[in-house]
Amino acid sequence: MSMMLKKTLLVSILSTSLVVPMMGCSSTTNSGVVGADRKQLLLVSSEEVLNLANQTYQQTISEARRAGKLDVNASQVTRLKRIANNLIPHTGVYRADAGTWQWQVHAIQSDSVNAYVMPGGKIVFYSGIIEKLNLTDAEIAAIMGHEMAHALREHSREQISRQVATSSVIGIASSALGLSSGQAQLASLAGEVGLSLPHSRTQEAEADKIGLELMARAGYNPNAAVTLWQKMQAQSGGGSPQFLSTHPSSASRIKAMQDLMPTVLPLYQASPKRG
Ligand SMILES: [Zn+2]
View (cartoon, protein in one colour):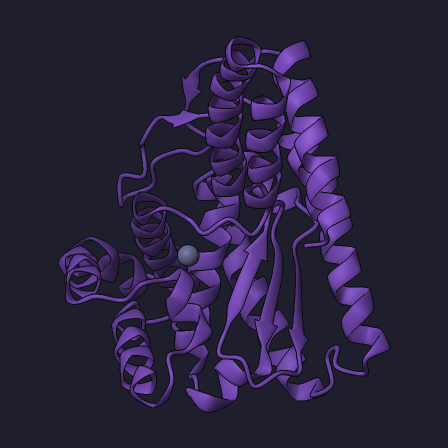
C-alpha cells in the first residue's frame, strides 16, 4: 500500500472516529455450525473501509496488468473462478448480503507462495502458491474459504478499529505532552495503519473454521485443509512461504481443524462433491 493511501486512510479514520463515534461491540456474521460468534469492536464504517480497499485493489490489479502479470495463465484463472463460484453461494450462511457482493478473484504471476483477500471479497492468488504447492481444487478451496472468511468477518475493519481505539489514546497523550510528541506518535501510527495489517491469531483461527464450513458446504473435502497446511509446513523447509509469515502454522492450528472434522464432514457428505 502506498504511503499516500496510508495517510489518506489515517486521516479518514481519525475524522470518522471524531465525527461518527460508532462505539460498541457487535458481530458481522451469523455463527454457522462452527460457532463463529465472537463479538467484535467496530469503530469505523464498512463503507469507509471498502472505499479504500477498492482503490488499493484497483491499483494492485492495474499495476499487475501493466507489468503483463495479470491472469496470464487462462486455465489457472478459470479454475480459480470456478472454485470461487462454487463457494460464494454458501457465504449466505454467514451473512445475507454476501451473495450480492462484487466478489473478484485474480491470479498474479509471481514465485511468491501467497494469497490474500481485501475487504469486500477481492481475492488475489499468486501463481507461486498454486504451482509450488501443486494445489488440488480442494486445497485451493481451503485457502479461498479461509480468505473469504476474513472478508465476511470484516477482520480488516476490526483491525483498523483497534488502531482507532489506540489513536484516541494518542490524542489524549498529545494534548497532555505537547504537539511534537503527539505528532511523532501519529507518524508512527500512519506507518502501521493499513489494509495489509496482519490478522490476529484469534482472527486466523476464526477464518480457519469458517473456511472449513464453506468448503464442506461447497462440496470440497475439508480434510484437504489439513493436507494444505502440512504441505505448507513441508515447503517452509526450503525458505519460508510468504503465506506462512502472515499465517503462522503450528501443530495446534492443524489440531484445531482436525477437531472440527466431525462438525463439518456431515456438510461435505450432504454436498454435491467436487473434490
Ligand atoms: Zn488468514
